[in-house]
Length: 479
Image (tube, rainbow, N blue to C red; front, side, top):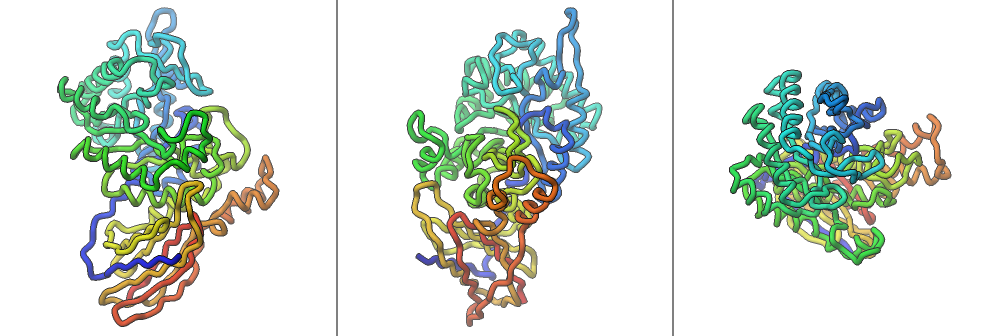
């Protein structure tokens, strides 16, 4: 099957918001104290343009934020400051997830993850509010009110899941009320939101609660994955994905946009699946999935935060195999996966989108003005597992008064930027030496290749082959 897409250079532009670079996820706050985590975040900031970082557990005992010793309250914000100092130093900001419960305030012993995060409500909501007010006031003193007003404060993580919150919905709403009030007591212009739920849940109830209590909700945050509520209990991840309709995520975002109206909508977690050990995360499949869905929702959300930027991650355990199917855009060694390169291509785009005509069952197309003299023509070929997908011949027909002087294409697919396949080809070593790591880094790089431009009376054509789960980004130099 072939596909043809048409755009007109003389058409009026639409806005393209870079929702992919607003925020990126990381696993656990304590990891941000590591030198390798910081090196990888510095790289992501420089190459992907990410502006905020979100992670779990800034209030966990491992961060020593709040303790009770000899019946005395002890507050220590030093470790949290080290993380925020680093982010601010590289031009980034925190998307502060206020979790989990310090043991000094816990009402039970229920924990989650290898780092034993406590997920119970506070025994004293007033003491919780005092902790939040002290922490936020400290940051205002340290970084200045103008800086902290540019941050986001999100209350908890996925309280609709029993694994993350042992209280009821009413208990979470009470936590939100105390937290939001404490933050606004510091400064009314600080941004606070929630409910940070999984699977797009609780949002109407959350907004109703805030309205009834006259509470601020400066943004609405939620999460979703294409594996949410799909398949049957016990199904493996690939089977769950095979049951997903191709447009599952954009339909959910569209429904959420209707629910929240004009409010700021932040998806603070999403990925190609919710399984932290799924081989497809390391493959071109994830790159095509990311590329398509980021562009699909760009005019519907304020931020669409990929989970996560790195495999330096320890929710289950800290895996040492270079490619083990975790969420990260980079491996533990900082080697870019195909999805990282997809994000890099998105970051390099302009902010003006042209209308595109044409459709295909698996190929999607977008046209974006790079600047006054360049045009980016973007393609992805993606389908969920066990859905039909094949090599496709794609033709771009570009109309308009300007002509093309030349064009080049950068690709992500099985044979381009595929660091995992390069690792397999070297024998899938469990541990890498510096030479092997450098070789895989080279295999991950984006490279431009010349592509033919065929002039027509009304413009020009560009034709190329697009394999399954492939991305092609053509940059046209205009005369």
